Image 1 (spheres, helix red, strand yellow):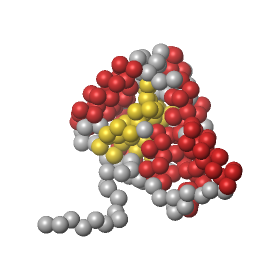
Image 2: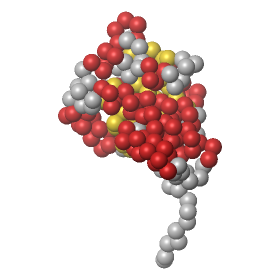
Image 3: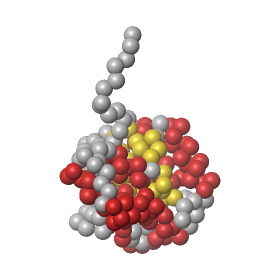
Image 4: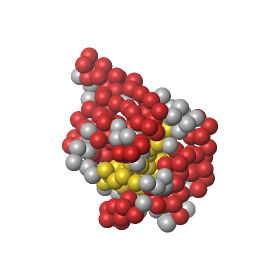
Length: 217
């Protein structure tokens, strides 16, 4: 039997309304020992994700561990995107073992989760495997996570992928929500976030628009 192609996207692609983003433990104490990714790149990628989620209106949970007593505040680049967002502080290394975080997941009520944070092997593996075990579909933004070494990050990603996690990157997250340059209502949002946080791709957008008024649509 032949197959007929249709211009319909896969249901596995993310949309702004079909998932909850959970940003976990982007804090200074955790960042000091993070060596799997450059600190500047990590902060830039986290900022890109935060501003993408805020701009597209994706449900978002921000959670910290021992913020006041040990680990410090969440990165300014993230909180700037959510100025009115309540921070959920925990004592648990695995955020899925915190009643407040899980209560918020249930309040939002979406069964697709996107995770990122520090460290991959602890703060991300814990909730990712726990959510998978309870039937959630889990994505992890690999370049918006970091760990004490490249080995620690890579093995954590391997472990999660083997369990069923779907890996993504920060820029992919943004562009997957836009997906069509003809979507004029979010075109300036997407290109604006890209110019600020998407490195060489953002520079390319600045050049093209400045030099000859290019427009992706």
